[in-house]
Image (cartoon, rainbow over all chains, first blue to last red; front, side, top):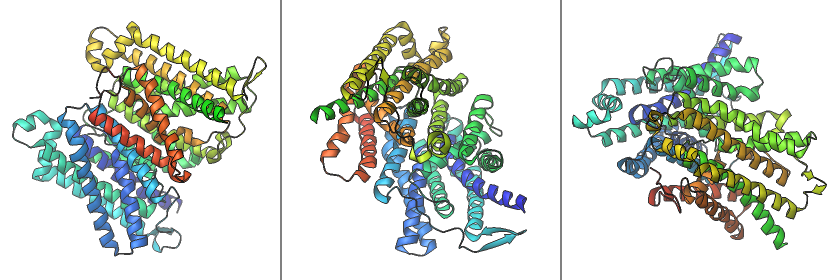
Length: 288
Length: 290
């Protein structure tokens, strides 16, 4: 009973963290910079989905499609308007990271301005029905979260591993200059990479707004778990990032047994920090 | 009344100046993008508040509020040992956001979201610093000392090695410089001075809540340093005056206080993007952001 509850909690938290981790590490894998703005996109998607379902009242499936399209559009827009020009100016990755941090804060303050800073909740968890597995209740939205995450992981890994564009992405990730020489248009590959990562951000946003209460800072909070997950699993490995996300979810759920809940977040930091110091390439990564 | 308004502004400008000049030492001079700089400020503020509320003499509280952030700065700087600066930035952002959550949730020590109230103002040598004029002189004096100290570091041979590390870490290392050690020292100095600034803030406003830890506030300091220009102390000083005038102008525009906070942050982020895009040297910077 306690064990099934624990497994289900770990699966749900882990799925959310793993979704964030894979979207975040995809950009790092191909473009070699930490895109903190990913967190901003997650928050915005979560709020947009919330507004569409709660106030516009259109069909759930249309809300999902609109949220994903908007998120992909914004990702492409930021890549084309901001990052692309800076890359052409040979801006260092440190500065791209600074810009992505500024964009994250820009998203956050924009959301506070438009939607307000009060907490918003899409589905009150108690009232929804659910399945019973060994006497433990799991709500239908939570089942969908787990299924949607698994679907996203499989699609992403198949896309990057077995399609032509995915092959180009891996080539660019491996050696950008060499890929350019062999005739790959790296800017276009970066564009595809941003579309994919923003779609994942959109999915993460929808999942977050279903499962968690929304605050403007939720994206920046969750992205920390995401990158703790990618670093633990291996930031250069997509599969590693997914497993890393589940590891962070697992450790957090273990931690609440031993620690006061105020220090739950300290676990994430300690895991991230220990990996950075002692094993920067993560569990499954091949090189740091 | 107008004197109180001006003195209040002078105190805030001094506190931000000390924080920003020390951030410029780590970011502008050495190239260490430390997004936890604001957490060091918050750590200083909370250390001095918690100690002062328990009756610690002011100077001891001031010293400890400088030393407390140094401990965390040292731990964070260990990331620089093997990895390049990007990972350091990642770790510091994680620290900034998670330390905010921890301060928000550990209610017994920090008062949680309600913060700490009635922090006593210092009484030094029988002088009561409830007098805003005295407090302004004291703050300006400490800020000038801090800025002068950083100015001396920046102009010394140590400061030039810092510039070399920022421009090319591997080259500096190949010339026999222990770049890791230099980065640690820079972060320790910057965190100490920021902690002191936090202490000055806490005992001036006498009330602090977790927003002093908010990673969003990092934008203010970034805006000051980037507007002034990297590695330019003069730039940071001028930048502090300009950036801190923005909320003062907003105040006169009759905007509701609920949106003035996010609006200010939004404006700072836009200012930052515009400067990085069109004037990457800032006002007085010798080197462009690149």
